[in-house]
Length: 165
Image (cartoon, rainbow, N blue to C red; front, side, top):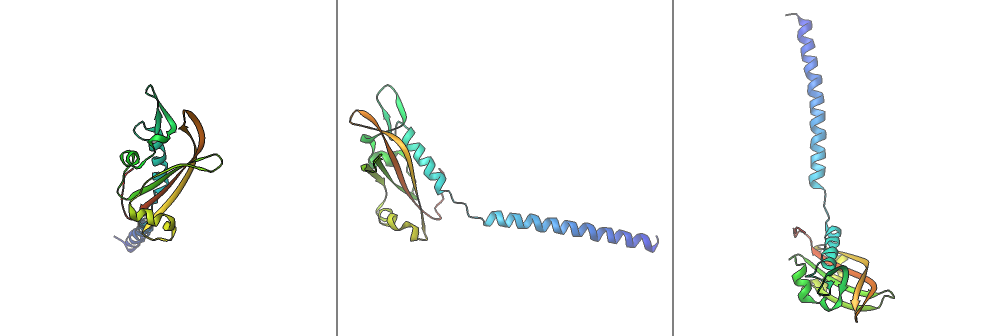
């Protein structure tokens, strides 16, 4: 063996190690950034809640005995008992409000415990809770006719509480 060959082997090894270290640091930084990122699911949970309560026969969807009208809310069903059976998660509370097109309140019901009811108006200022309000146009059944109005869902969720929706 000559000295020139030994030097070439060690230089090649250093170059490979340098690239391996660069790639490892990049992968490690991406993994740490991904694992430390905060995932907020309250908007998705609000969307799923809205779809669940407006499209299910056992929830608020109007049913005339022959068929279920998805997206049409039966105001007779809008109460705590139905909401509690329909969508119940231990860390989530919500307030469902129906308004006509002029903004007048038609009916309100909630699935909130006493603490959530007290915290809902000041939810944005509390660090242990997160809240979200979703307003959509819906049809509702009242006095033997279908009317158009707004469905507002105010959702309050305790942070750190894991829930699968």
